[in-house]
Length: 323
Ligand SMILES: NC(=O)c1ccc[n+]([C@@H]2O[C@H](COP(=O)([O-])OP(=O)(O)OC[C@H]3O[C@@H](n4cnc5c(N)ncnc54)[C@H](OP(=O)(O)O)[C@@H]3O)[C@@H](O)[C@H]2O)c1
Image (cartoon, rainbow, N blue to C red; front, side):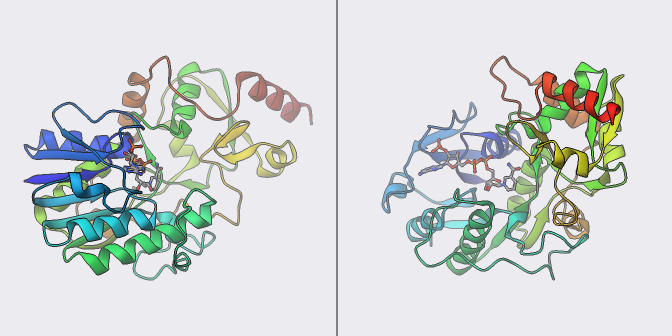
């Protein structure tokens, strides 16, 4: 198949291109080239999707397209440029399209969505809600423009080359061992998908002509299972949400954060989506120890890790034990 990746210079787009090449497909990636490089073996076309005519440089027909856009304008320009000369269309959306982050175990068919972005609104980076609303708009635009559409609403994507450093915090922390500050309660649940499994499913979806809307995410697991999945000889000290909040620890990502930790009950539904439809449609999540080991092996000197510094973790544990 001739596959066009709109993106392909970073993390998931690169994983899709790599997977498609491994499956024997002819792969073209189209992006500015500012986020990184395409994988070896893929054809690269330099485009700027903020220019309405930017995709003119992408010539010919394609059996399948994979688009990771966040901005509605980028999807509008793609629809204008590609309608009539592409086949299957995967739009990589996000579980951030959902309006209700609090209710656990929601399923794709019934979970309520955020409203679409206001007409002309394009600033997906403005906030988590703006991102979700822009993705809702992108989904609508793709469904209107193309016939065979697979909307893959990714949850937290983890694994090698993740530029966010969120999962990597836990990989690095468990590799170091010692006393590990584990947030929340061991019975709380978290959820993620290995970038390679999502890419594998995306390529097979194109090959098989899968259409419809799915949550691209692995089954939820408890925090206890999550930490056990990293192996190592560290010991866990479970620290409550109340303590972490009172000590200005930031949820999810960034400086002084604990990645994959989110306040409850507000986010009890964010990492507990029903993955049954995706599994039935072909998603094959690998075991966590494999994702953890491969992510550790892929670390480089310039690798970005978000989360607590060693000093912050030690100080927090000292205060926790002192109280
Ligand atoms: N990471 C997660 O945990 C997570 C969770 C849920 C959903 N998602 C979704 O999963 C997808 C991840 O995709 P990704 O890892 O490939 O990363 P991404 O951060 O979405 O990358 C955006 C891609 O689009 C290209 N791009 C951006 N602006 C452009 C422009 N003006 N013209 C042309 N190309 C442009 C970038 O390349 P250049 O900068 O080189 O142009 C890059 O290749 C996204 O759709 C994201 O919303 C991610």
